[in-house]
Length: 139
Ligand SMILES: [Cu+2]
Image 1 (cartoon, rainbow, N blue to C red):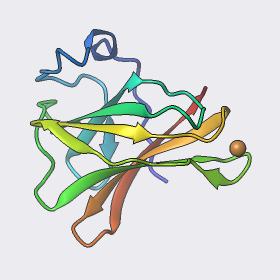
Image 2 (cartoon, rainbow, N blue to C red):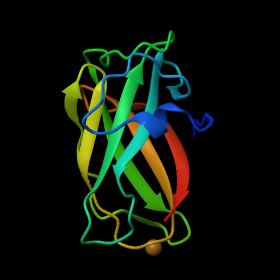
Image 3 (spheres, protein in one colour):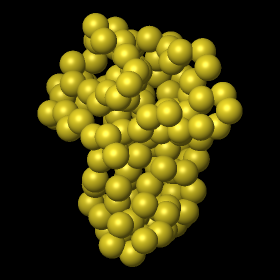
């Protein structure tokens, strides 16, 4: 598993859904093997409740920190599991393009509260996961 832990970024405190234009990403995860970096921001949640759809925003940046679109043949997917109990989340949703380099998934559903291993996958046009980032959150 690949994991780069980034520090809490000032960008996380500034982003609102109505004000999404960011040209620099200062701290981020890298998809190892690719010059593709992401920063994530929960716009809603996360809440471990089956009745709640959570929203995750992903910024994609190049090695200079400029927000850019994903390479044409690649897309991102979300996934999560609860390691202590060995099950996945209820619904991983799907990402939509919001604007250049900004992807939003508004349909992430967890079936219970607890400690979750969150993943964002970099997926090619054949559906192969070519790289991933992961982090843990308790909620
Ligand atoms: Cu569980």
